[in-house]
Image (cartoon, rainbow, N blue to C red; front, side):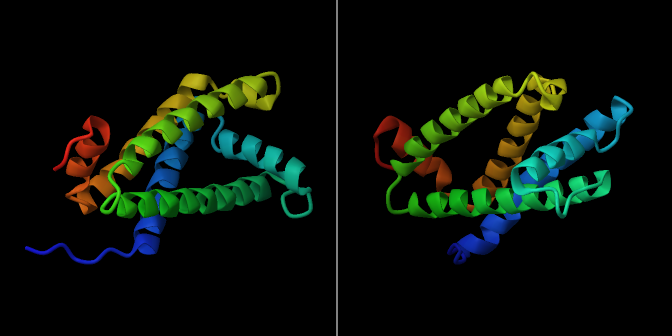
Length: 165
């Protein structure tokens, strides 16, 4: 059975929505259990408002909505880039090894940035909660792309081992 053509934009949007939703649900659960629903997006929305200017995100609801829009837009962009790389792997499997290095470097950089902000309101977001959220999102996004690209396994093997399929 022939593989149907893939639309990297549609797949990237879907993958991004999956990742963003997984993180949003994770922190909704974490915040609800701690007795402070929507604490995480509000704190992150405050930070975003400080960077962008407070014009549109003055109150808690505006901060949550503003950050949520930003969060989903960022994940859609990441999903599209990730999908483009997955599609490029059909022609150049070695790109997957580079992707693995970039993902690990990004995660390490993200944790270092989190440590820098540990003194402010973000300090109350435990590093392990952020780690779990990122792992869940990555697994969900890669799981979706793995399922929609059956040849990905062979491409990854080629990239990591330097062998042909």
